[in-house]
Amino acid sequence: MCGIFGYIGTDNHAAQKTVNGLKDLEYRGYDSWGIAVRSPRAQELYSRKNVGKISGVAEKDFANIVGDMSIGHSRWATHGGVTKKNAHPHFNHDKTIAVVHNGIIENADVLRRRLSEGKRNLFVSETDTEVIPHLIDYHMKMGKSLEDAFVATCGDLKGRFAFVVMHTESDFLLAARSGSPLIIGKGEGEYFIASDIPAFLEYTQVVNYLDDGEYVKLNRTEARFRSFHTQKKIQKKDIPIVFNKEAASKGEWDHFMLKEIVEQKDSLARAINQDDKAIKKIAREIQKARGVFLSGCGTAGKVCMAAEYFFSVVAERHTNFAPSSEFPIYHHFLRPESLLVAVSQSGETADVLEAMKVAKRKKSKVLSLVNVSGSSVARASDYSLLINAGPEKAVASTKAATSQLALLLLIAYATAGKLKEGKELLIGLVGKINDQLNPKYLEYIKKVAEIIFRENDVYIIGKSANYPMALEAAIKIQEVSYIHAEGFAGGELKHGPIALVKKNTPCIALLANDETKDDMLSNVAELKARGAYIIGIAPEDHALFDKWISVPDVGAASPIANLIPIQILAYYLAVLRGNNPDMPRNLAKSVTVK
Ligand code: M6R
Image (cartoon, rainbow, N blue to C red; front, top):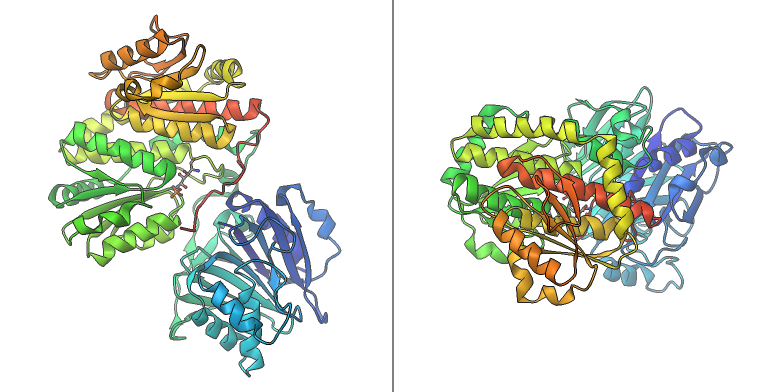
């Protein structure tokens, strides 16, 4: 969680640059924001913080703040409420050291007690972060240089962190990483550091990734990398970035969520445009593994659950799905011949990384599917495939989810020795989705949203791989519209959930034109008999439906086709209820805490 941005260069408008950069990171956290700027000759660091979203802040309000070095933060609260005091940056007592931090310091309470001994009111916030500037200050008072104090502080901290430090009297920034992302952007006589690349993409397209256990010292002309465990120097290669700022900006669209839904016209094609050799190699690993586990969180977890059906139906291969937060419990079943398939859009989700750690401890192999190249998940994997969905900024995962589904379905076909057949099916799907995703289709689904947006409850049913899609549909509706939504396996209704259904309760049925269709129609009839208002998402209309949303008939790829109208429906439900679908309450785009 949280977005970090830092700048050092020759531009005296570092404050404005930082505010601008933070706006691109707001998706990571939007409770509150803050910046600190080092102005020449000033005794103290200048800072400004507030609760609320950084997007509402005008850059021009920072025009007269002079300084060529600045750090900033957009927060998703973990320790301490959403208050101005808890907003970052945090400082030492003299306000000579400023820190912005992402992650959780697990031993913050112990460190706070130790640092507070004999000192009253040392801490002004309730955050775990505030121990960092005080620790650096403590080590400096013990005679260490800023850099040595910083390194000593890294050694004091337990947990996952990424933080950037600025000091009034030092002409450089220091930043360390242990579990949470930090990327360095290399400009002409200037450096940027941020939690994600789009924040500095308009200034540079050359980056270095900071890895776990490393820190960087940035001055205007040089980035020096070292291990904070051994202080050994580390050489980094400059990496060019292929996507441009436009791909990561909203453009003409009202919201990123709708832009990203419509982008599925192209993102699906990119997802399946993989090197055949790489896919066949992965398929061989799956064939020979003793125990294949699929794991991810939230939407990515539901994708994994659908993939369990893909492998079963397409490749007759048994796989096991577990949400990453539950995966460690399965460690007894892991062995060196096992394979964990970890799926994550951001590649930074703490629970996924933890699941991978458990698998590694048992010497099992890890294959990951990620959207962010160079992400922690990708780096920690034995094999990694990029889904190539392009930047996904809306908190609700849409195009990443369908790309993950498409790639996993392709791998299932390859595992069955039918890569060509899988490719043909998915290429066909891409063409049909292209035809379908037009303004008329969006308008039609908006009309359906207008019928149900005032309702308090929505239920969604599906069978086989469309059952996890019913669960995913519930996530989509919950997170952006705040309507109570639940997904069920169609056949489970009669075992309890049907008691919830009253006259006109909206119930959405996800149907495929396969052997599950008749059972699903029976389940729909059971709902209809209790007065439910039925929205059928299906290749064909049916007398049981009150509203029909058409989807292409695409065989095993039906979960992908069925998910898209659900995403559109969730989007319009959010908008009709006056919510900002890009930044739902209480959430953040990547969940880097356990
Ligand atoms: O970045 P990841 O794919 O690992 O994120 C996992 C979940 O946090 C994510 O899918 C979340 O459930 C989405 N906001 C749902 O739309």
